[in-house]
Structure formats: structure tokens, C-alpha cells
Length: 119
Image 1 (cartoon, one colour):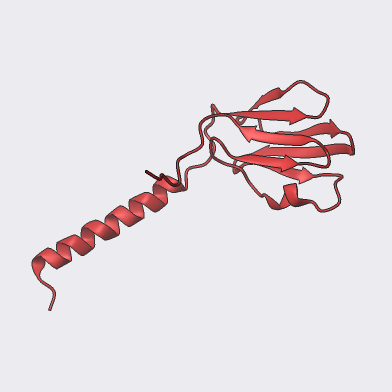
Image 2: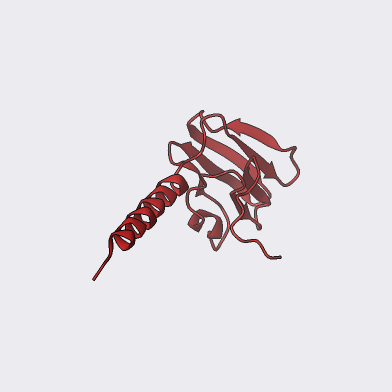
């Protein structure tokens, strides 16, 4: 038999879980910045509020980067394995995607959230 305190505790835990899920689903901020580093070129910055497709040229050829309402992703790349495409949408500060063969690094500016801490 559940007591009144058990029901209150279950309600608090449930509401906390819903709050954490909703807090974790926030997308890239409108004022956020994407930093694009390409082999042989100076790093470039792009506002996440400017939606569109950016061509970035590396040693293997051109890659296309998409900035949209969901965040940032690699749309196409000339590399063989296409691991950078499988990274999907980057949404939070500190998210990163790398195309090693084409010398491309995409990073959303800001500190990465802490997912674990060891003392």
C-alpha cells in the first residue's frame, strides 16, 4: 500500500525527470557561433542564426555544411567513409564534428557541458 509520502515522492521524481528531459532538448542558441577549421585555411566563424549551406574546401575537395533550425551538420563530404556525415546534427556548445581525411573540424563555440565528474 502506498502512503501519502510515497505518492508525493513519486510525483516529485516524475516531474524532475520530465524537467531534465525538456532541459536537455534545447537546441543551438540563436546567438551561437560555429567555428570551421579547414586544413591550410584560417578558422572561420559563422552565426548559427544564419541558416544556409556553406561550402568548405579541404585537401580532398569541397564539403558542404548545413546550418538550420536543428543546429549544424555535415551535408556532404568527399571522404571515403563519411563518418562526419553520420555525426548528425550538432546542437550544443562544445559539440564537434571532424573529417580527418579532408582536414575539416566543425565546433560550436562555448564550453562543453559536463557529463561526468570523478573525485
